[in-house]
Image 1 (cartoon, rainbow, N blue to C red):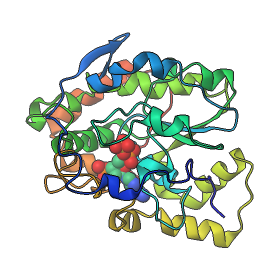
Image 2 (image 1 turned 180 degrees about the vertical axis):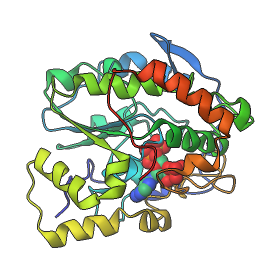
Image 3 (image 1 turned 90 degrees about the horizontal axis):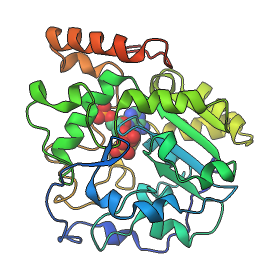
Length: 306
Ligand code: PPS
């Protein structure tokens, strides 16, 4: 039994994502100042109104993260067979890629319930229907330094995002301004709302440290009973090693003019504390100073290493 049902019966063959298709993918996009100072890629803004009018259903489950927080294992929980591409198991709500790739809204609109939906939106920019329908939402947060490093490498390989440039000068070090806004506002915005709505707030570091414990939190939140065997299967299925090898979860079905995995693999390292391999002493000091100013008493506390 899957912990989460896949959002969709597959209505498009996985081959639509395969290499060689979608050659009209265009080049890198520059960020636009989207809404209230939160930057997005222009393709997201093109359907902003439709996005805000998106009709959530009471039995939808939303998985929300700042980019690169390690959400993928969660959406994988819906498919233990490993035979459904990530973007179909938990369609990415605001994603609006070039043809022939379907947008998140288009995939979701005609799907049967219950749906599993992925988003990177800050809480205050969610389509209002998720709150109106009292949907269950799972938020996964990851420490800022590892997120910064992961996002930097993702910019290198994701040909739809701006060129990140040199690590020493990249905005990814401070996480401002990058697509989907400020990491600080994102993690604290969701944190503040977690007791006002049906939100389970999880940490990437906790999942890495003790996946069984975090799966228990998740199954409890979703009111699903899992025996030990099922938990073991989920842990195995969502391990970094397995997800890196599986074409349904490693995004190798996307063409290189979108994700160039020869530059950096999507499933890169999946570790806690990898930031130590990138941050110089000076960068770390600058980061810590900014971090103290922006995070003081505002929200969750993170572990930078295990
Ligand atoms: S995205 O693009 O934001 O939707 O992707 P997301 O999966 O949220 O973030 C990618 C980073 O998460 C790591 N990852 C994992 N780590 C451990 N175990 C599993 N199963 C796993 N799945 C994804 C992935 O490797 C990226 O982190 P880095 O540090 O770059 O390796």
